[in-house]
Image 1 (tube, one colour):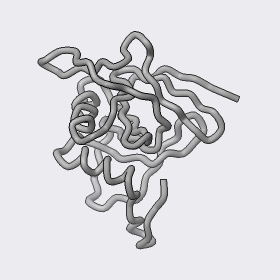
Image 2 (tube, helix red, strand yellow; image 1 turned 60 degrees about the horizontal axis):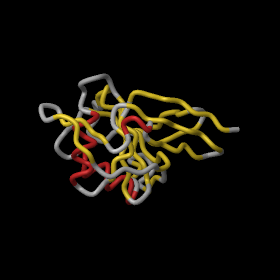
Image 3 (cartoon, helix red, strand yellow; image 1 turned 135 degrees about the vertical axis):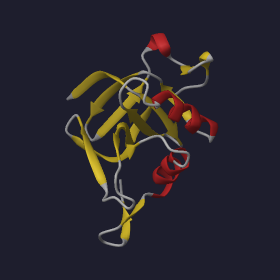
Image 4 (cartoon, one colour; image 1 turned 180 degrees about the horizontal axis):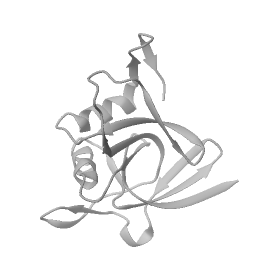
Amino acid sequence: MTETRLIHASAAAFDGQGVLITGASGCGKSALTLQLIAIGAVLIADDQILLTKSGDTIQAESPPSIAGLIEARGIGLIRTEYQSAPIRLVVDLGRVETKRLPPIRHTILFDLRRPLVLGPLTPHLPGTVRLLLKGGRLDPENSRAASS
């Protein structure tokens, strides 16, 4: 069965792997997405995301009315390439990570688990997101690589 939802978020993809960026208005979703694009990501969508669940996949795409547009605060709307991609990671900028070496966290989208990173937006977050999608992370409790 296929389910679709429109949510307030931004998303980008590295090598066909999507990262969904959530949080309240003004928390830095577009800023993080712009930084990800600057280091090689492709925009999925900014501000609104169409999520479609099919089996174990959650596909993210842009609503047609905003496809290829991203807001740069203080600049305006910018055109860029865009694509759809499956969501492999969620970054929640509305919640603050308080631990230096946090446990591996997950969130539920539809009824599927996805790895979760908590905010806030920091200078190292874009590179960290890129590396998480590329290689995963070491599980501090088991000293082994955790898969997404």
